[in-house]
Image (cartoon, rainbow, N blue to C red; front, side, top):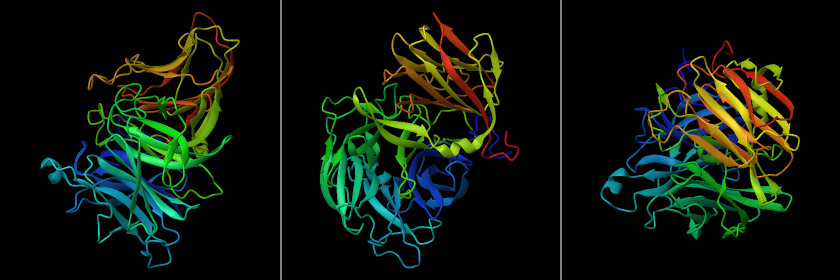
Length: 488
């Protein structure tokens, strides 16, 4: 059955077959959310990169389309961005629709093997038929490598105040900014990031966008790193500051690294371009894996899935502004059955295997030192989600979750700090066949983890250690599959 294989995500996007990694070119146009992604149609491990393509009208249900961009004599098609040139600044429009522009990195593997540094350059393609086909610009590449290794992943945005295009890309362990009036000729502006933030690995997949906050509009710069995340391997950091079209000024003077997700399995995420102003959200999507084991996870005939889409916002905390991430409201359309649960550690609750749980508690009236959920199956393979009050940390433990021996980096207990000291306490969890996404305190903390049980997780129990938990409400929803016609 299509999309019915063991471990196949049922409400997350995954390709029909073969290898997938970074989301690319997220753009909204004429009622469709476009998802382009790094894709290798020849194998279930990384290979010569293409851009795969899917579209959705609701951010939940996806239609697979044909491959959008293929490798060519200039190289593989690495990560990048897509957007609508609504003012036709490029002059590439020939029909009634403004061109959909895709910016991407041309990666020349032969140059890399020769030991040259200039093996990555930036190119563009354009679509005149709402993203169904693309024409590569005849004068590619449009930004030549100035002599930087790992010079890639262009994100292009329109700055309405300055009436100019801004391009940001990564170069080693920093980002570089460029400007253009027509998308075809680019002026280098500045660098940001040397010696700043987490420097444990190469920087990748940058994003830059304004967000309104209680402190006025701030700019958020998102950067993924191959190694150096708080729980090992790949992760995504962010910076909050001001951007005047030429310089990004980081507000974080003490250089504390800010993490978008503390779980091990949310990487290379970027946000959608051209979301309508009346919507107003900044919607984000990540690749649900980690380079420590991405090519080894036990799935077939595909490898790779995306997180659920998340709405990003800024919130004041005791330590300053922080980025929040919450599931998009469209996911509520997957709910089918609702159950109100009593917090009873002697009770086992049966699960459909596709579930959403929302739990609120009062920490002042909670005496337990450690408490949470145990998700498990009849084989006693389990995933533990908890909070330790003594360390003030959330955690997810997948040590005994099933298949774990494909990588030494996979099993373990992974931690996230609680950022707020509010007495109110909210958890929001999404359980799919082989993933758990955990949001705490209205999105101030999120953790994403994949796991691979030998049988589907189909039950949950509660635990509390050295005391009691004061639960205010706990609601369980059964969710529908986005792929199966029987909605299981």
